[in-house]
Length: 88
Image (cartoon, rainbow, N blue to C red):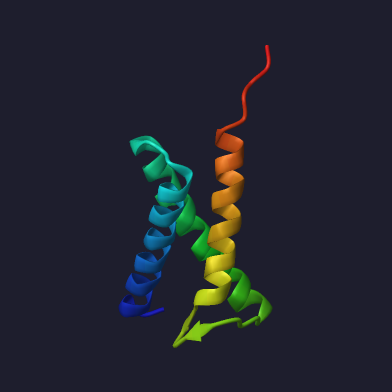
């Protein structure tokens, strides 16, 4: 991928992580976690799109639809795992 495509993907992934942070009302550490998880999920969604040949909403070489789905799934699962209480 070329640099403008990677930068656009980063901007979209960071925006999704920030919106998720606002909706879930987290603190500063959760913001960093959500941003990292969003980037990871967006990248995994892109990989699935390329490997599987699936296209949902393409914007040039970037499949925004699969990136959004991957980011949303990773964000929701990461939030769920981080909020679980350990029973002693």
